Amino acid sequence: AQRVTQPEKLLSVFKGAPVELKCNYSYSGSPELFWYVQYSRQRLQLLLRHISRESIKGFTADLNKGETSFHLKKPFAQEEDSAMYYCALSDPGNQFYFGTGTSLTVIP
Amino acid sequence: NAGVMQNPRHLVRRRGQEARLRCSPMKGHSHVYWYRQLPEEGLKFMVYLQKENIIDESGMPKERFSAEFPKEGPSILRIQQVVRGDSAAYFCASSPLGGTGELFFGEGSRLTVL
Image 1 (cartoon, rainbow over the protein chains, first blue to last red):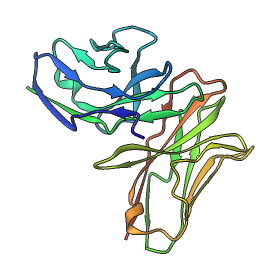
Image 2: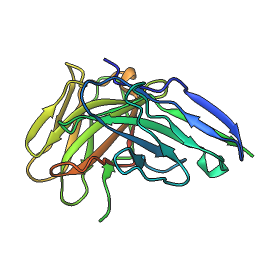
Image 3: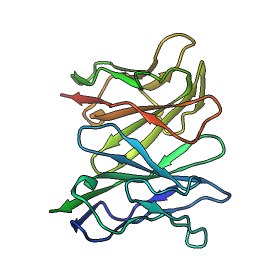
Image 4: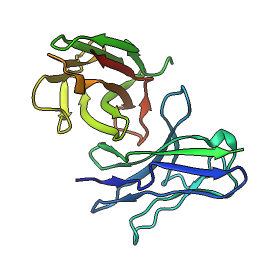
């Protein structure tokens, strides 16, 4: 069963425009949710996690349990934000499930 | 701390040969995860191991694929009798004992089957 859904495979925005990468999840209970990012020629790395509630590189993500969503947002996109973004969920058994990823391109 | 190390970075095999991919987790990490990345499918979970134990292999194909994480040495993902459909990037990730909720990824091993 698909636990994490990222409906957009590709997303392009202009520099300075707001950006939102969508993520919906399916899980009963209280999962932990994450966003991971893979910049060109770099390894996949953690961007942020919902528990920490912090903003990283201007990105924020709010867990909406009613809509089972964890969308990633940034008010003003920068060229260096161009990357592959994965939403992920972990369960109490330390198992991690990733979405199919969204490739973000920020147009100068 | 060198981070998660995977080797080889690139591996070319002919159909029917065996592929062995190795993953050394970060120092102090005892959980290892293997994922396969295909262009249209994102990261697909394959197997989750702790030292000398397979915790969850629900993502592993039933045949030809196996994984281990011995007491000493790296974790190994083994693919026997490779087929063209096995061509993909294989990523390893590790997390520390008890899990902090963060996975640390290697750079991946790209397998090409001719």
